[in-house]
Length: 123
Ligand code: HEM
Image (cartoon, rainbow, N blue to C red; front, side, top):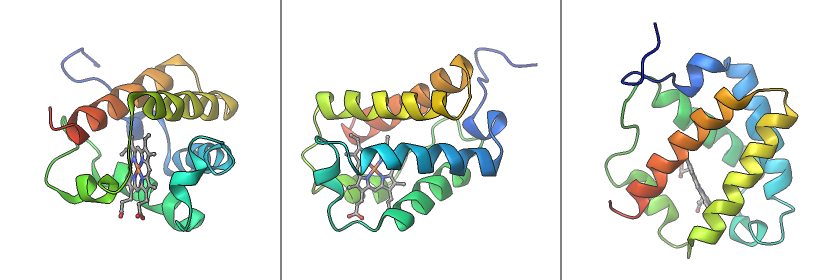
């Protein structure tokens, strides 16, 4: 049974193929987004898709998926702001919905990304 203490993880709600599909749809939008695309200049699109999907699968089942310096250093050169993060969240929500998934997946993904934001900001 799912409880608040043990909320579903993204990989409980999506198969690997569905996860890959949402991420592809998400980067379709990100790589042409006027605010987000400049940050991905020079970052190979397919590699980026695989890294995000691989990271999410790797953190399956962890209550706090973010630790160590690995992801902090991956984002250190970027001037991330709350507005950019909100923009990314909007694009991700649109991608999840466009792939036919409902509010449970949206809120699960938002919870995951909110943990990432706290981790990146060292909170
Ligand atoms: C506004 C928010 C974000 C922006 C603009 C952003 C941008 C980027 C960029 C440009 C890279 C490529 C870095 C490089 O290759 O030099 C990257 C890598 C990555 N990002 Fe983000 N990111 C954001 C949020 C997130 C979130 C919420 C996650 C969730 C886990 C995430 C996971 C990753 C992963 C796994 C990599 C690959 C790291 C590696 O293997 O080197 N990012 N991101």
